[in-house]
Structure formats: structure tokens, C-alpha cells
Length: 193
Image 1 (spheres, rainbow, N blue to C red):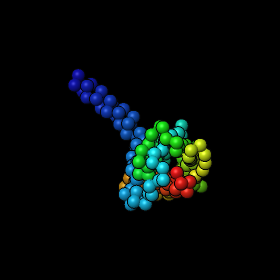
Image 2 (cartoon, rainbow, N blue to C red):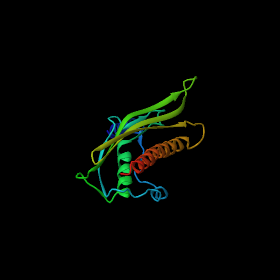
Image 3 (cartoon, rainbow, N blue to C red):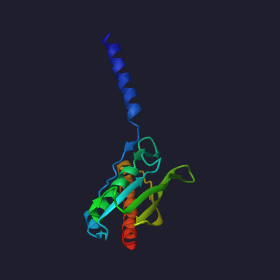
């Protein structure tokens, strides 16, 4: 009788391990602008701004499927919205819905891709993102499109390769998002918003 209970527990544990042990690891992508970068943000001429963020439909969960223990997932929408909002809070004294100065940031394209080599091995990962920024100053509307991507090799064959991959992926996504933040900052400055 006790053997039967033990066999059931072992079977349950095996099911749980196979169900959850190989699930993609959720990566944390920081939504904080580094302090060295914040120091280079100029205060805008306008005192306030209205901010609207339009996320990409597939940007809440991007899954990177490399192999059983290499899978990872992350969100692009929330970190990018947080970084953009922090930029605007640094540039302007207030974010309000009633401002005559408006900014709309929309992620228009998002492409996550694992590149397969000639022998069927996974050799690289890339992420391409395109945004549209619409600035409105006292009824005058200007649009600008920004497109950036990053590529990273998938290296294996050494201890901790999986952890290195996930760290490089997290850092690469953050650096990509910061490129957009810098571009938005310069675009606001060039339009004297």
C-alpha cells in the first residue's frame, strides 16, 4: 500500500518536472534609463506633454525557442513603454492628457527570429523593431519612423552557456530599446517641443 502511494508521488513529481521544467524562462528587461544616459537628456521647451503608447500585438510575450533548456520569453511592450515614459518625465515637468503638446509612440513592426545554420543548428538570434513617433505641437503634426535591430550568436559547448545566452539576450533587448529612447529624445529636441 505504501509502495503504491510512493509510486503515485514519484509519477506526479515527474509530470510536474516535465511540464514546468522545460517552460521558457521569463527574462527581466529593465525599464529604467541608466543614470549616465539620463544626464544627457535636455529639458524640453514645453512644460507638459500628453503621452500615448500603442503596443505591438505580439510584444507582450516574445518566445525564443532554441532548445529544451535554452528557451526564453520576454515582453517588449512594458519595458519600452516604461523607458519612454521615464524619458518624457525627465524632459517635461508634467505628463497630462490636457496638453497642447502630444506624443504618440507606436510599435509598428516586431520580428523575432532564430537563424538556423547549414547543419540544422541554431546559430544566431535577431530582433527587429520599428516604431512610429508622432509629435503634435499646437496642432502641427510631425511623424518619424525609427528602425533598429540586434543580432547575437548562440554559443554552446561550455558550462553556463545557457545562462550566458539569457544574459546576453536580456542585455541586447535593453540596448535595442535604449537606441529608440535616444532617437525619440533627439527627435523631440529637433522639433523644439
